[in-house]
Amino acid sequence: GGKSTLIQSILSPQSLLLRNEVIKSRAVILEENITKWGGANVIITNNDPVDFARIGNFFDSIVIDAPCSGSGLFRRDPGAIEEWSEQNVQHCSQRQQRIISDVLPAIKKNGILIYSTCSYSEQENEDILDWIINELALESVRLEVPSEWNITETNSAKEGAFGYRFWPDKIKGEGFFMACLRKTEGNENSEKQFRKSRIEKLNKFEEAIAKPWLNNESDIQLFKLGDSILAMPAGLEQALQEIMAASLYIRLAGVRIGK
Image (cartoon, rainbow, N blue to C red; front, top):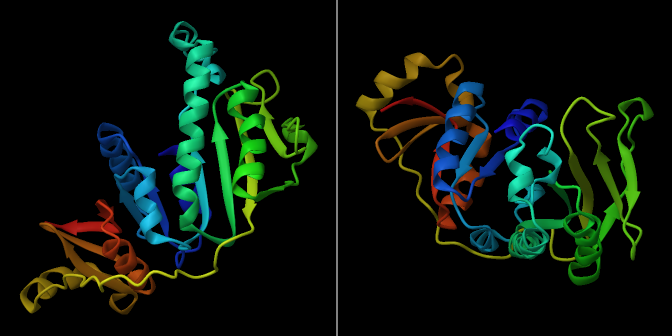
C-alpha cells in the first residue's frame, strides 16, 4: 500500500482512489494499511485486471505496479537474486502486456497510464513502452524531473519513449522504473449502461447510532456493505454506484465506522 497511500495523500478529497490487488492475501494487507491511513475517498477491490474492462472509459488515470522479475531489489533482498532468471524476465514481460491490454479500456480518452516495475531489464521496461505505443496507440509523455533528484531519463530503442530509471547508487531507495503514457483513443465518458446498482442505505435506527460519529453529516454518504457500515464523501456516490454495477468485488469503500 505504499504507492496507494502516497497517491491518496496528494489527491483532492473529492477525487476517488480505487486500489486493486489481484492476490487475496496481499489484498488483506492492503486493506489494513489503507484503513490505518484513514482516507475516506478510497475503494479497495480484489479482481483480475480483465474485470475492469466492464467499466470502460471510467478512470482519469491508472497506475500499474506490474509484477516483475525483481532485479531492482537485489541489494535489499538477496533472495531475489536466486529467483531471477532470463525465463522469468520473459514470463513477466508477457504478464505485463496482458495486464496493460486488459485494463486499458477502463481509462478515458486523454487519460494517463503510469507504468512501473522494480526491474532493471529493458525487456520489462523500455521494450514494454515500445509495445504499448505500437500495439495500443498510446503516446509517451515526458516528465519534468529536477536534476538534483538523480533520476536517469531513458529512451526506448524503437519509439524513443521516455522512461525513468531509479538507480540505487544515485537515489535513496531501491532499483525502480516508471514511465507515463497518454491514451489517445476511446471516449471521454463511459458508453456502457449498467443496471443501476442500489446502494444499501441505513435504516433510521442505524442512522441514529452512526450519525453522531460524523463531524459534517451533510458531506458524508453512509451505506452498508455486507455487515459493515461505511462512510464516503457524498460526491463519490455515483462513482461507487458504477463500480458496484460493474460487479467488481469490493473489499472496502471509504471508512468502516461500524459493524
